[in-house]
Image 1 (cartoon, rainbow, N blue to C red):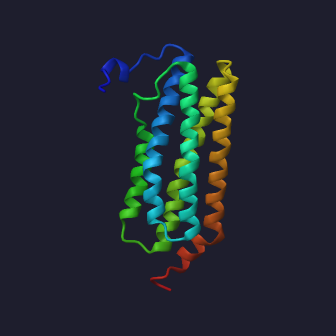
Image 2: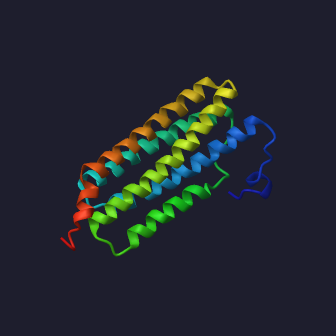
Length: 177
């Protein structure tokens, strides 16, 4: 299915138009994350980090379902937009995976890359939730808040993994220790 130029570059005239564009951007971002997480899990050295990426994949799939519920409610299609911001963040993580790096140092870097992704999502979901509230779409705002809470929890878990051993292992460095 081809998307016309007009469909890809819709006019944003109302707050509702902006809301839909934000949701499409998030939907694209989440689907990019779904493709990237298995690679991050495969590249992780620490079992807890690998498991964290695998668990977040399941959470992300549920977040996509929530977005699809919102799109259905709006009578809109979630496609037609590509999130360039997420593409860049994922590309940086991919570059890290391709580096010749100490496995523990790479894990510390992967946590940083994953946290940048989480922070992007927190900003995006917070914006979408606020737009939903302004539009009186409280059921949407509740769904978006649920995801926002999950993203915050994931960020905290990543910080605990970093502080709880990954960064210490990276500091020691198995190659140089």
